[in-house]
Length: 102
Image (cartoon, helix red, strand yellow):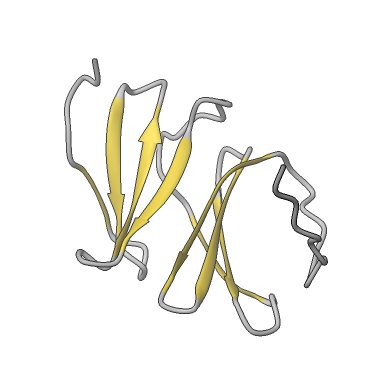
């Protein structure tokens, strides 16, 4: 059996439940359980909060998730309640990229 010892490099408190994480362009994006300011954006060097992004009409749901796309330089956020995928630019610009998700 393969085993690796893992050392904690850094940690910080999240006052809300965390639904997803993504790293893009040296920034850590944290999707939180909130009705506004759902995306918290941290610098990956010191983990200091840089800014927040509000995703309008995104309701808190444990099935929401977040991933990054380096090629498109954006984030993709699954919105369970609206049954869609949202494209979020690092500057906060947003659009829906799909209708109903099967």
